[in-house]
Length: 315
Image (cartoon, rainbow, N blue to C red; front, side, top):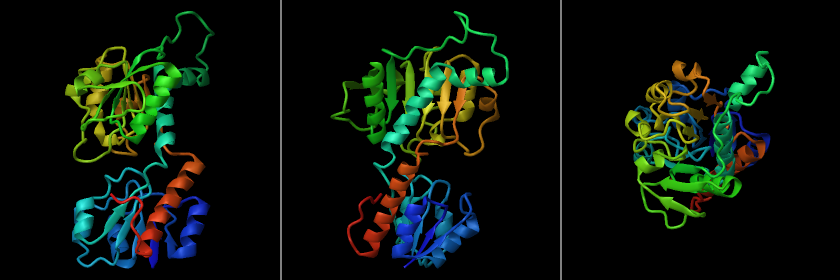
């Protein structure tokens, strides 16, 4: 079976795929173009895409009889793939849950601490040669120990964030989830969105997609406290970036830590100009062993499909 891997992946993952399939690895690190998306459906049996490879309804509509039978997504998030349109075209979709959980939770805590303690701002000061030495009231930030963390989305990643916040910093955990959560893994209380947004630290850990697009907007940001910070490690379009910038400028919240962006890799210029915003280049799973695990899980899904077995991670 002919397999296309749409971006360079770790050597171990490529070798595993090559041992089982007639493999083509695209060398560009950019998402597939519209023409490449359509060609991939016509020319390959299997495709291993990732974030930014936008298999949307128009792409499937333009390929009336696709050769492709499977999209084995590299990543847990798959909002760049219209699963209903893929299914209608006879194409199954899988993802890589579990492999990304701890690494993504770590980045959430990284952003929480960097933003609360103004670490990015402080480093810029030092590198610019503007630091004049320690004094008692310099760059005072938010002390997170013992504070309340509000987690929006209590799936695998949300629970991993809750464990870290509760065990590491003694934080009180409240969370919002669309369905009831019987066991959050730590002492925690499920609450409505308004109450969770009023926490000292708010972390977004929901899936991307139509149901969560602009979940965080001017209305929900108004529930935040002036000393609070917002962290997003979910999907960029969960946040209305223009509304976030306006809320930060207006003092509705103290800061924000972002690893994902609404129009990635473009970032709202207003956010770029704010010192109280920590901006990371989508580092959520950026550790070699994590990316290897993700890739091997995707290849495992492909092999199961090729052998006619139940898929380990269907979506």
